[in-house]
Image 1: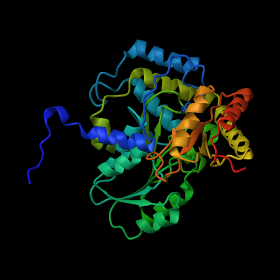
Image 2 (image 1 turned 180 degrees about the vertical axis):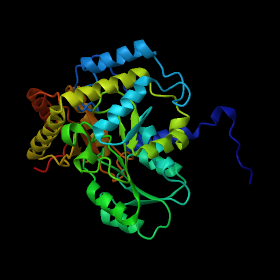
Image 3 (image 1 turned 180 degrees about the horizontal axis):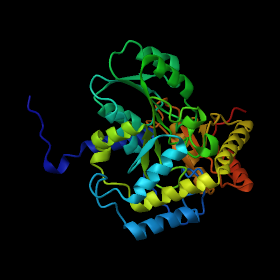
Length: 390
């Protein structure tokens, strides 16, 4: 049988079929450029503390760019490390309660760096089923034996670790981005200590929201700086900037500098982003009440929405997840909210592996009472048939 060889003009013809499948399933994603100033009430971004446009954060970015230039100019090991990067790493580690920190270009890169550099062939990596895609990809690239355990199940994680000879680590989000629920960090840590494993926690959604003054979920659990614990995080949520970081013992950070490909071969974080993150961190340290306020807003959104009959996951941090009857209903619901002046997130498969589509609302510390009422009213007014329990 002669195998068909695609002609140059149709080597991407297979994409047409893939697009049709996405369209039929209601899973087409599109880019929607936003203007610099939008009339929409924003409950879709991850700007939990409202710092992305705060004058101090913006000034930190501008001053850093003026002093250090627009770009880092190279990888961190060549010319991409400035005194500003080192200053940010020192203050971030001290704030979150760790010995040392390493700043990377994104939270995604931070997870790739931590998981791959701390594992490898012969290592067992136990990963919570609800983990972020960056952790999943880190596991895939690690060349380790990977075991995915049920979401939030420390006993199964412990049993999976039992009997493994060699290095092992348990990897989990601190707060899961889909439903906004918190991981059982204390139980995960106990399992790791019992079985001689390291614990790696992605605290992207915990920093700035949980713990004393927003010091993070690990700080709240009493695990910041604990033996065998490494944290990753992003600078693009509560700190209102961009970039990521790995925090842990100094020897772990030195190991990443020498072995983590996501760090070694990537251009350093732009000075403007480092300057903005440092300004946001200092602002949070000076105004710790912002962390408590974002939790209060999330709780109020949840209580008012569920009291009106919607099904939502109780938020442990800033994310409020509201279930939709179907993927197409979720997409229409989010579009109707937008038309009514409210921007919300819309999670559909494959972003939600359980197959349950959702609206994703993110609380912000700077929301007023009137804005909260407006958001709740809009979500309820646009709710599709089948979204409410009564």
